[in-house]
Image (cartoon, rainbow, N blue to C red; front, side, top):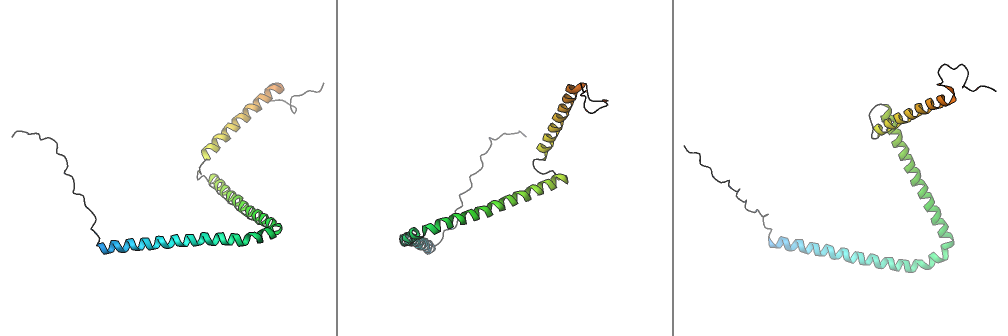
Length: 154
């Protein structure tokens, strides 16, 4: 039999499946509910704004009269809250650092352990280099000297 080649066929487009239509009454109920809820929230926000303005209008003279007491009290309360928040933040940071050190010491390889090991090796290498340099400067290598440092009294 002869091998007949057919041009590649395009896949047939699938018919667009639409979700089932909801009854008209259901759509009307949904729209009415949305309008009612939206309107209610709009009215509540307007009432809240009006109440805030009226409250500030009534409270402003009281705040002005009592400001010599209220301003220092507000500053004190702010400093107390800031102190507690800062203290909590430092405590949380300390706990995290202690946890990191524990994981590092127990070999669990926490994030940043590679950088710490590299820095430790660089620091040890530089310390060794400085030790050798200092020994060379003070008098010849430092190995086998019998005194304590290579200086001789004149």
